[in-house]
View 1 (cartoon, one colour):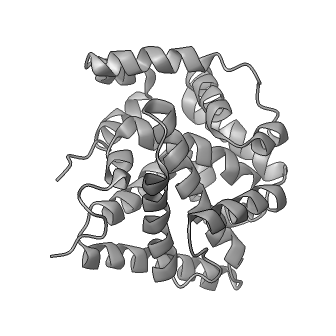
View 2 (tube, helix red, strand yellow):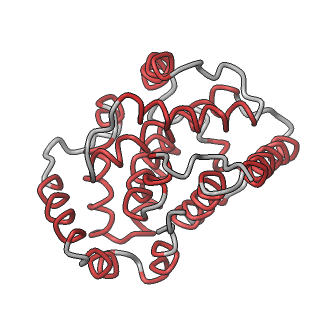
Length: 254
């Protein structure tokens, strides 16, 4: 039975490791706070009430798509689409088409950025693989304006970062909730992870620090992971409530 993503694809490697997935969330959480359509994330109340719980819900769907047979992945995408249509019906309005693309673009960008921070630079064909997977997700959702190739995505991504982000009351509120959910030490780690991952305009809008003190820490973590000490580190750093869920993000490759 055909798979949605080829077993040897770099996309499975990226989305099969909990530490990479957490970096994807760290970067996306910054842009979510700035997106001009962030009010939609507040409509149901789920994101502001439990930002970390929302992460695991989103990641669960993403992994269903990346690691499933094609028909199951398409079913997961259709389910996501139906959920959004239900939210639109309850609010009596349509989610802006650009907002869907913004989220799709974030998944592409931070999949690449998170992996490159922890592993190595991706080559052009690997970046194209990442793009292809999420392009197919967007087309299955019926989105208009999905770029044709990686080069077109790069151009549209730069424009989206330039035009679709702003600081609002939602931005400040979400960061207060991040801090409350994580506590001061883990929140500081989130902030400095974002510094290493987000585009310059995102960093400036959020007034993130410019000192990348976390980069040497990343190198130490990579060594600890090579020594198979990473689970102990994550046990210390992660909120107890979410440890098992994070460990469950590590996906056995098939």
